[in-house]
Length: 189
Image 1 (cartoon, helix red, strand yellow):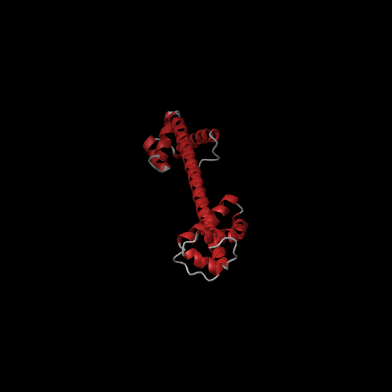
Image 2 (spheres, one colour):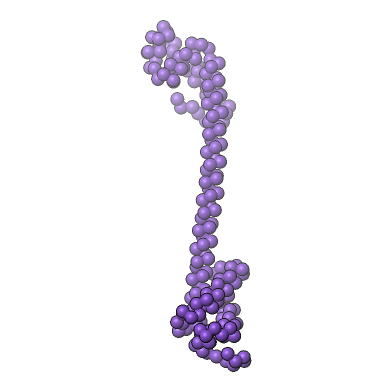
């Protein structure tokens, strides 16, 4: 290629296929600014826009022997648009992944916190059950741990059903106070 001479896009492409570096430089100088504007219009990021344009020109040089280009300007603009869309898609996937990781960590942290709170709550409840008066504790354990009906508990303990109910109500009242102190709203047993 002769310096200073005006060449058409088709002539530049022909020279490019014959590995003319000056033809490549001319194409680069002719289209860089326009392609950068196309990329920046979508990405709004200088570095990513420059990278997209440079990738397209690098691809043009690498594939100079293979490509049959009829309209150089349209080809380059389309190539930049595809690069930009690929960059946006890649960024979107990255953001979704980071969001997913962040959400997973948050859920894990929340689960661990809930598990610890539940464990402490159960320890406090069990301690309170052990501190109940003997007959009250026994009636509660028969009811909640062994799933015995009130009549069977009364028979087992030689008590009236109303006395068993009183023991259970007293136990539940104390346990509700323990749970309330630990921040729980109610106990549904």
